[in-house]
Length: 611
Figure 1 (cartoon, rainbow, N blue to C red):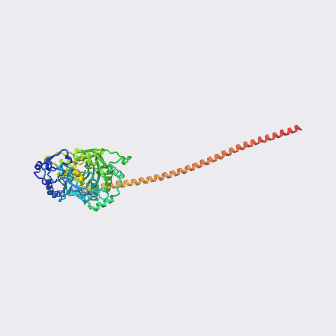
Figure 2: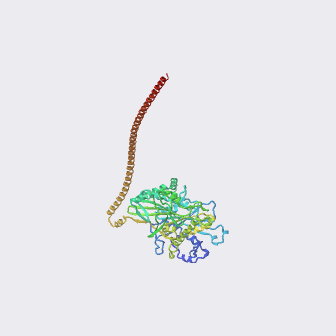
Figure 3: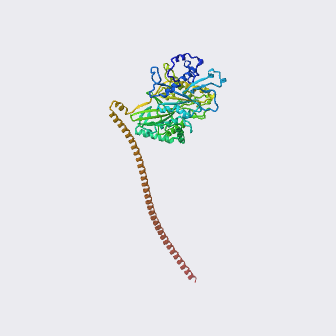
């Protein structure tokens, strides 16, 4: 719980607690209870009532200061705040008397209605859990966004939005929504592009590489554009974006920011943690491979100079909210889901969708605003989900990573005089969420609960988990500023006269205009080359067709001449053969006549002899 003035006798109260007033062990304390750290439930209620107004004041006065790990007594003047923990109750057909919201509106009162089925006195107790805000079943997606996410984007703060709850309690619905009721991620994308609508830069010139903002050269810019086009080509068809956008604009009135002295570039990435392995959900498949048969590669998490990043993670440059939602839908299709006894489409992994907003100022400075939306897999009990085989292994890894996350929150919530190292290296999930666990980014947790008696024990673990996060106190983070090649020149000119400053400003504006003109010339030259290529292709095609026609005509004439010569030779041969056969016929006829004349003379001689 957040408090401006901690009670100096708090530590004495902790030591004097009785096991009768102990708080129910949470998920991460199941095997290692610590009675000396338990908290009196009724004291917690009084403290929550006294500090409600204080929490609102802290939220309204957030400033831009860099975060260290946690607040300490040596620096009492530093502004302090903790994670905001919200509770959302899923609508159910039959109301349950075991879950009640107090009159103040931010305390949930639970009590196990099935007391005859348990002999544990702790489970029969009435328990109170305080939250920043509680959303009942009648609260829609608009109010959830306006309370949990909208202020962070308006203040341009780095933030991590985490949904946590049992399987099937509505975590993914809160983040993504459906075809009619948009979740907080589509609303955040529309909010970002509406805020910077006049300053969106349509060429990827800045990019976050290994958690450092770098300036991309022309070749790298071209490669990023090709990657963006290839990924958008394989994205599934997103037909209901216009309807979703109309719904969002009907619920919100996002106003653009004033000023045109900066340019904004937006990048998105999507990772999945499945069985303690990290996969890139936006990885570009090989050109010859089918989308359904792409072999996934396990990526490595690297830590350097206090920064943690996924080595080789694909970051995609987007120009509109529609493009980002297409990539989000592509990543959803690649994520791991399965059916259990509780949820027909249960997430079997933790997914983190990241939006990086890079602002390039004319002064030569860049700022980075990162928004992480973490969809935690639901905590499960094997006896109720009925998981076996690979599903059982997935559930074990999910529960283990959530238990490590609970230990990290528990370590962060310890008093400053008993502070220990946060064990974020024990899980891939906590390694990626290290910045928010150390207080370097704003952390907001949306806890979803299905208020039914049959889920009482699971909900109790979830609520205890959330109560740990409510006790954390961090220093307020500040924006991430990065120096570019112009920063040293600007710093050196602080003491010069106003005329020189105006001259420097004019040079910077001229430099920016020259860059824009250079990009426009490149675009025009590329278009001119494409047109010239098309014209040359057409001319080459026409010349080839003409040459082919001439060749066909010449071949036809040559064939006709050859055919005429062959006919003449054939006719001459036939005439020659006719003459030869005619002469032979004449010779034979003469021989026949001679034979006939010889026979007649013989007959005449015979007649004379007889006489």
